[in-house]
Image (cartoon, rainbow, N blue to C red):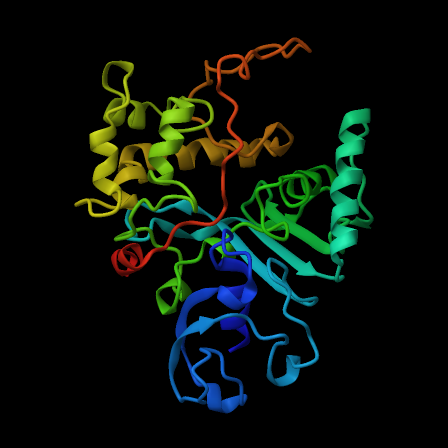
Length: 341
C-alpha cells in the first residue's frame, strides 16, 4: 500500500496541481488492512486499483511519515544494475553486469532547502567552481538533496569493484545537476501505472508513449530534435532504418507509437551483429579501465562532435534548437496503459 501511495505521489500527471484531484492506477491493494480509504468512495474495500488524491501520511509502520508529492521519504533505497546486451534473451538483458548502483535517501530536505540547493548549484556553475560532495567511495557520496550514492564497476577481470572518486562524480552529476529529474531520480516516475509496471524492464509490447503534455511520442520527438538515433548521431543502424537519404521517416517511427503495429523493442533494439559489437567495444573499455573518458559505447570514433570547445555561442538559440519542454513523466492515458500490458 505504501508503494502505491508513493507511486501516486511521484508518478501522477504533474500538470494536476491539487493533490486532492490526482488519479493514479495502482496494483490491486486492500484498504481494509490499513483502515484507509484510498479511492475516496467512503468505504474500505478488499481490492481497489485506483488512488484518488493523496493521504496525508503513509500507513502501517510508516504512519508517522508525511506524504510529499514528488519527494521520496527518508530511508528510500534503490539498487540498479547496468548490463550487457544479450541478443539471445528476449529482454536483451545479460546475466553479466557492467555496473551496480546503489542510492539511499539519507536525509529529508524540505522545500526551502531544495530551492536553496538548486540556487547554490547554479551559483557554483556561474562561478566556474567544480562541485564537491561529502563522503568517500567506500561509503558513497552525498549531495545537497539528501541522496547518498555509491557505485561499483567492472575491473579488468570482470569483477565489480568500488568506483573511484572521479567515477563517483559522474554519478553525482546526473543525480544532482539535472533539472528534469524527480527528487534527483529518473525511473520510478516513468513507471507504467499499476501491476504492469512492477515487472523487470522489458520494452517488448510497450508503445512509444508521449511525454506528459506532449502530443507526439517521445522517441519520435527525440529523433526530430537530435536528427539521429543517439547523442553522437553515430548509430548507423538507426540512421539507415529511419533516416533514409538523411530525412526522418516519421511514418515508420510512428508504427511504434500509440495504436501502431510495432513497439519500442522494434524501434530501438539493435541487431544481433550490432549488439555484439557494442559489447565488444565496452569490453575493450573495461580492459583499459578508461572510464574517465565516459561510459557510452561507440563502435567507431564519432564524427559529429566538436574536436575543440570554445566560449563562442553555439548559435542553437538563434536557430531555434534549444528545447525547454522536456518532461520526465510519460502520458499513460488508458489506451496507452492497455497497450503496455
